[in-house]
Length: 79
Image (cartoon, rainbow, N blue to C red; front, side, top):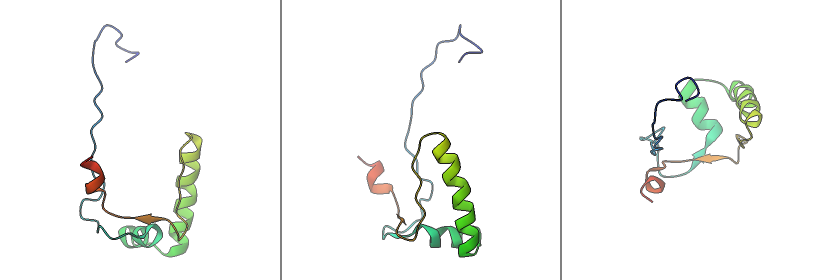
C-alpha cells in the first residue's frame, strides 16, 4: 500500500476454516495440538507460551490451558 500509493485497491476479508475436518464436539486445545504436531503435553505448553507471547505483542488473547476448547467452526462461518 505505501510502496505503491498510485494504485487503487480494495481489501476483502473472507472467512475460511483452519481445520475443516475437526469434530463439532468441543475438545481440549492442548490435546488437539499434541495430536496435530506429535508433541508431548510439556512440548505443547512450551510452544503455547511462545504463541501467547506473540499474540500478546499485537494485543490478541491466546488460551491453551486445559480448559480451552476447540471444535469445527463451519456453523459460525454460515452467519
